[in-house]
Length: 279
Image (cartoon, rainbow, N blue to C red; front, side, top):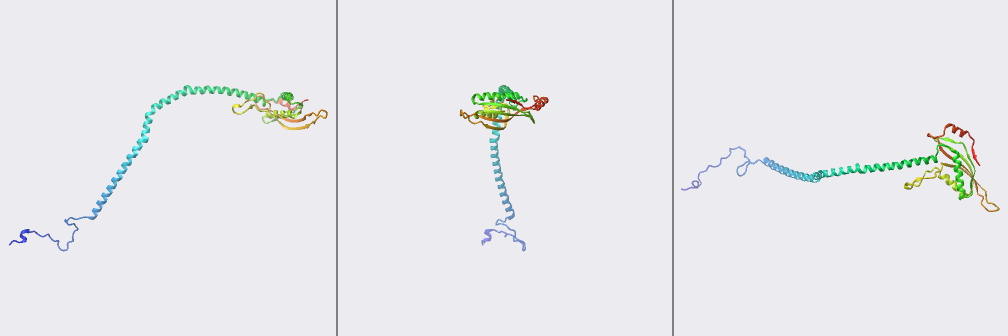
């Protein structure tokens, strides 16, 4: 009799674990799995993948930075280096031009300006000596007034100095002051000319800027300290204005310092002398 056992063949049944032995975790294939190791493996793979991405990003950024550096820095320096010989040649030409053309021209201009400046300086010192002299020169003061009176009387009559009194010089610091008392018979227009004379005294230049130049006829420095006026009225017979009597007190100045200052003896004599009068 043929049985199922004969067809399938004899096969031992799988061994059964002994009673009390714990079962091991596994799958249907009989393989044992460690969950903790699987998690660690996945985590390591994730970290490795992330590190690779970061490395690629860093590498790409480095390539971009190096490229920009090459374009904006190395390229410019390279071009400057290539142009350096031409620049050096150009600078050498400019230096030669400075040494051979510009500097000699400036030296020549400097000499011309120096000569003009020296001339102007000498003329200025001369003019200063006329408006602020080192000597009292009382005779020169009287001549100045008499010359002025003659000039003004010709255009604005009447004008005359009826008296000129010069007092002794008074020393004040580095200058001397000569007090002068005058009596003037004049028309109003003529006296205005006298006031203009005093106002223009002491100036050595006229104009400003490029128009500035030395005054040809300078006037000795003076100032007015007092003016008294007496009107003569009108002539009853002719009806003509008889003019005005002016009493004017002035101060006229001169230097004392320097080699050309008055000597002590001459100064003492001038101080002790009585007032000089011209009438």
